[in-house]
Length: 572
Image 1 (cartoon, rainbow, N blue to C red):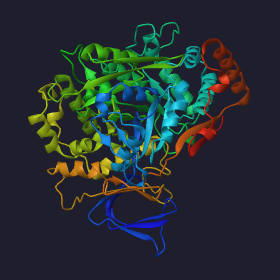
Image 2 (image 1 turned 45 degrees about the horizontal axis):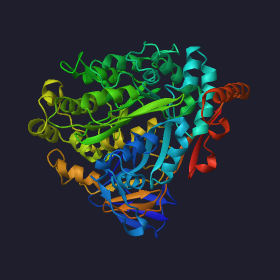
Image 3 (image 1 turned 60 degrees about the vertical axis):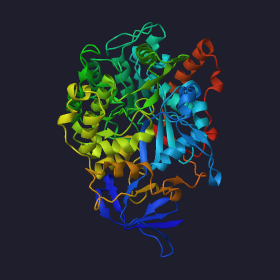
């Protein structure tokens, strides 16, 4: 179980290592100071070495993902995985790959951790079942709180303590990781045929606003000392002029302080797929990019980290707990639409989408995402995502990396492939910044690990970290990365070697160890017992009145979770 990686160029932002040639020592699944002379030697000469990739926001397991798999047979034909040596399982799916294939494709890119970003609490057991069948990856799931009836009632009354007690129970019951908020109040409004577009709109029948939900759950989050901040999908996704709602949403938790017990995390807001929330104008005729306004706010603010949701210009499958948006998309593109309401908790929609390079809106969306990446000054504030599969499949991360590292690649896209709206509606043509390999390691490794509260063991190659190590066949000393952008994409598409907990998972771009299974992270917070018991008595009473399942059958047992890793809170 001892290994040593020698001669590679190491990129490890959390330890301030920028292309330094140094040895990485591994023993018993961890990074260590030194190993014996009997250690297996891995020669990484002419290659780059990074921690395993961490995806903080993706959709890989659960009810809506399965809907996407089932009702899009045309998607399944675009990428097929044949059964292979060592028990490798068959699979299919381009934008929504099957469970086994999801693990294989992430690993091939050098990723070892991926977080399912929207779990309906009532359907948590199914989500964890799919985690069982997703090899290699460590993972967690984010339960949905922003349209939960109990949450809205507590926050309408300003009862933060009771809401915190309920949240503590729900996180344990679902084996969830953080407080996920999607279109707060708006998805509940969709149950009555409406939506909420601004933070001060009022949720029908609950008389609570998105502002109350966002700020209240941010206070709950810090009271519970959760490792990750609130994970926010703002109201008014995908509509022209929505950047004003986006900035108003960003401002709501600004005065709340991160609880010191959360460790490395010093932010109180994680905003997701901000590309879809950065549009100016009043209609699709006069829509323009508002990425400069959004990034100006982010550059000046210390309380926020975000991911982009980069459009990859593919045919894909959109899926979100923002049900009204999916109906709007279906109304625009005329493609098939699935809708689901989860009792008392959330709702969702699934719609195929074609992001064509020559389509005006798609070209603009691509450019808005690039602007967000390139205008954000500190790579410690932004994470690489495609909101997979909503803006494109996660398998396109290597292409996004190449776009970010090569201004020539972006200009070639603008000149040869994209509709003129990318020029006319955005500032992308005037931006010549190129990401360095260290910044790529930040947005794909260190920044996600830090904001998730996992930087003790994830996102770096320091002593004590999990031995999740990715080696790529890319030599910055002999390759002009600005010009040879296809070499960047090819390297990050197929890792030369991936170690997961010190064991070889991928070699020469091929998965070679199918027996590896990751751990499930979930939080186990503690609150004052008397209040907790009072809240649970109220919850159990309402279960009998409203839910179609018994209160006792609702929780996911700890024994049910494969190789689980609970993160314990402290008594408030």
